[in-house]
Length: 202
Image (cartoon, rainbow, N blue to C red; front, side, top):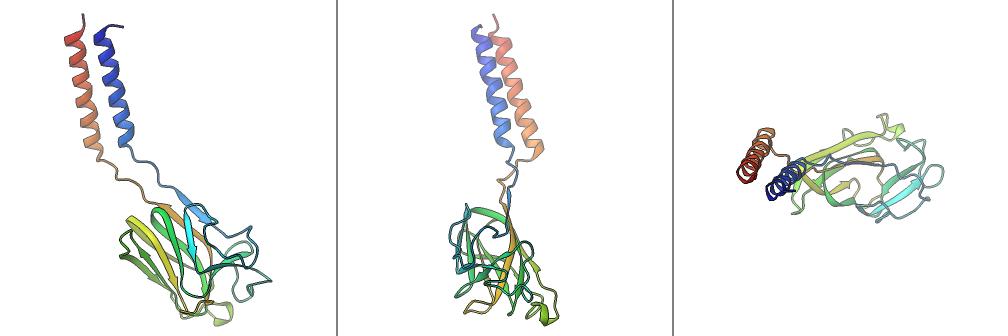
């Protein structure tokens, strides 16, 4: 391979690599149903990428009355234990949601890495357990595209006021360059590579 061909190959590889790096990775989503953990398990870091505070797992027929506080799915739920429940994410997420059955009004608050509140949601009712007459398993959700680092769910300040099930979160995506910018950049570098090849070709 001539020196000109070697230079051309290197430029081509550089353009391809730059193009691949410019394409953002797809957002990742996760769902946690709390199944598989024993009743009364204190939640901390059992789930990769999430750290819980003031959270406990309750199972139907043992720690939770499923006739009043039915799980959204399965047999396990999480509950606020001794205070507002919080979740810290190891990396920023763009959205968070969960299904809640509660005996006190709920507030879901989201915070960024600077600990500034960036989004919030409130329950529709003051209570929605079955005999309250309101539908259980209300969906509460928050979103903030630049990234949520922590969420808190507050009912009764003393805890023991709600159950949470099937929480879902989506990782925040890196910024994607404008398609036009990416195209012009790739074409421009390609032209430069071709010129080098023509000039240096023996």
